[in-house]
Structures are given as structure tokens and as C-alpha cells.
Length: 105
Image (cartoon, rainbow, N blue to C red; front, side, top):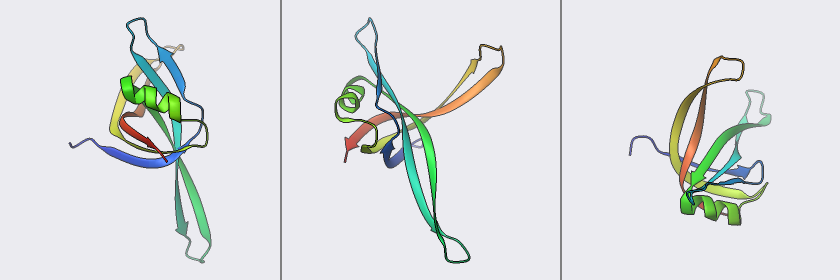
């Protein structure tokens, strides 16, 4: 698989669950990953990256059941870029991670 992402991070919010009339389930949340590095002066710094994450079906059910804000989660998925028109009529692009597997740690 060429488009594969693996991350371990902490959930920034409780999972937001959407149940569709068809029976499908989708869950959305943010995931924070932290990188610790040392500056030239020897100071340790931490940089946090925030990721928009979503999942469908059984993976969404698992995350909805076992995930909550602050919970550490290991995910595997793929990057998805979507274009849309904002309420102001401007073209926008967003990139998120579509999760195929998740494990609460």
C-alpha cells in the first residue's frame, strides 16, 4: 500500500459519532502526536501536531466504545484530501486520516 499512515497519539476530543439511516456509522476526532527534540543550546522542546481523523463501520464502533479525550490510540489508515466550497463561496481543501485499524493503548 503506497498511501499508509501509522500514528500513536492522544485523542483531543471525545469521538463524535454519526449514525446514518442506512445503518452506517462514522466517527470523527482529533489526534495529537508529540515530537521531542533538542535545540542547539541543549534545551528540550516538544512540538505537537494535530490530525483530523475519522473512521467508518466496525472501526468507528470500536473507537466510539473505547476512545475518549486524552486516551492514547494507535491507528493505521490513509490520507484523504477533500475539496469543498465554504459558506462564503470559497474553495477549501482539507486533509484527514481515514482509519482502517485502531488499538486503544
